[in-house]
Amino acid sequence: MVIASKTVADAMPAYDAVVIGSGYGGGVAASRLARMGLRVAVLEQGRLWRPGDFPVSRKARRKATRLTGRAPNLGDPTGLYYLSIGKGLTVFGASGLGGGSLINAGIVLRPDLGRLRNAGWPDAVVGDGLLLEGLARAEAMLGVAPVPAPERFAKFAGMRAGRPQRRGARCSYRQ
Image (cartoon, rainbow, N blue to C red):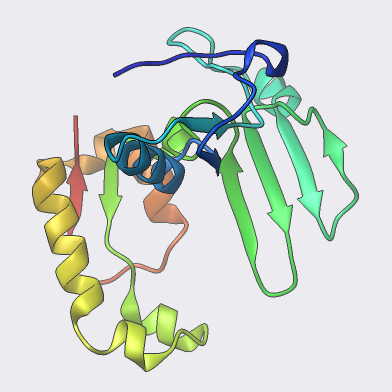
């Protein structure tokens, strides 16, 4: 994988496509466009985070977090974490080369379809089986497999705590 980080001053004068965000969606879009032969620029708000750079103390995590959305904008705009508070939707995410994968990579939890329905997702999306089929295909492509005692992973425990408990929920970890 090529990881290049340039400033705006170092960028080419023209691109065929510009992708905003380097997370899961942006990464896939940029890869597909580049494989089509297009000159692609990927713009990311955050910075490159390498192993050892991630904040580990409570104080360091707080310093690397920003608040956006309907709340007053507070914190470092290039910080790793952001909490965006909107009307009816709040998002906790990451900014940096890799996007949200910086904070949730390696954990796969299938969405609770009942919760999606209750949140107003159309039945055409959650009721026709194609979403589950797509998730199964993605899991197969990524090599997702259940692991014994996934609770031992702090990241898994944190993500699981953010959603209602279901009996028989599939919990997998990709290393």
